[in-house]
Amino acid sequence: MNNAVFGGVWANKKKPKREHMGEMIRLIQQQLKKLELGMVFTVKQLGDQLTFIPVYLLAAACDKPAISLVQNTPEPNAGYGCSRCEMEGVTVYTGKTFIRVFPLFPGQSLLDTRRSNESYDKAMDLWDTQTSVLSKVKLKKFISQTRGYLGQCHLRNLKYFDVGRFTVLFSQS
Image (cartoon, rainbow, N blue to C red; front, side, top):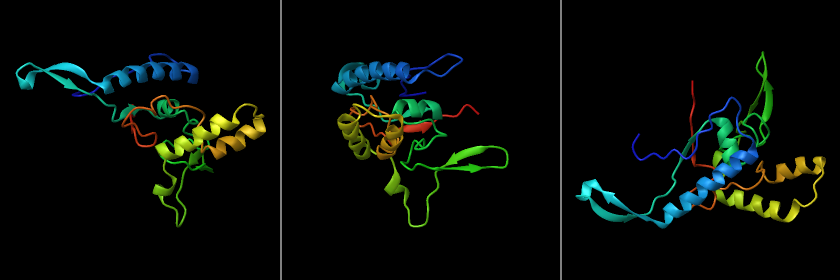
C-alpha cells in the first residue's frame, strides 16, 4: 500500500470502549497535527533532496463499529447510527431479525441529511451549553437534537478532515 499510514489497530477479542478509542484517537490526532505543520523528508525521486512537506489526513479505512467510535456517534444499528447521514432511521423486520435502515423519503435529498463539519460544530455548541445535567429521558431527546453526536470527534480539528466524508468502509468479508 503506497501513501498509507496505519494509525491504530485494535487487536483484541472485544472492540475497544469509547473511552479507550477516544484516547487512542486523541494521541493519533496530536501526531497528525504535527505532520500538518510539515517536516523535512528525503525524496528519492528528487535525487535524495531534502524537501519540506506537510502531511494531511484525507481518509480513514474503518469497519462500521470503528467508524462510530471515531465519529463518536451511536452504533451502526442504533438511531442516528449511519456514518454518512444524520437521519434517525427506522427499525424494520426482515423476516428473521430487526435491522435499522436509513431510507430517503420522497422529496428528501441525501445532501440535506449528510453529516458534515458544519452540523458537527452546531452539535458541539449544544454539547458545550447543555450537557451539565441531563436525565436519561432528556438525554435521548438531546441526542436527537445533536443528530446522534455523542461528544467530541478528536479528528475534527485536522485541516482537511470532514466528519461525514472521511471514512472508507472496510469490510473483512
